[in-house]
Length: 148
Image (cartoon, rainbow, N blue to C red; front, side, top):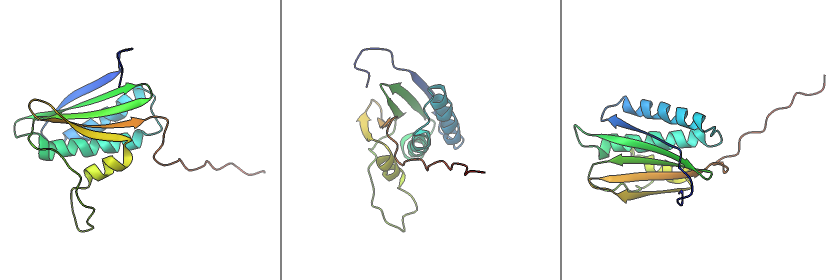
């Protein structure tokens, strides 16, 4: 992402394997995005953080372990990385209407410009990238007051 030119603004935090880590990760993400003045895709980024950290909590972090959330910003791109020490690789599942779970990566794939999985020892890193200037959905036009 950086190409070795300038330091990449980075925010990272480790979370324990517990339910309250997910809302804490969302709040951490909103704070980092606000510090970077990222507004256009903030909701998409925060939703993807929620999905990826939930996957790490439920499927990736073994009992007694946790996961790390890294947020990086460089050259108009925001990158999310969720590091865990669990086995297995996440994969997209079918879009079955009756499925009660398994849609998290479908959301990430739909909202992020790029996403993927990289190996680490132990475990894996699931990542997603967002180009700040490109909105997944155009914001609604603002209403202008009519003449009085």
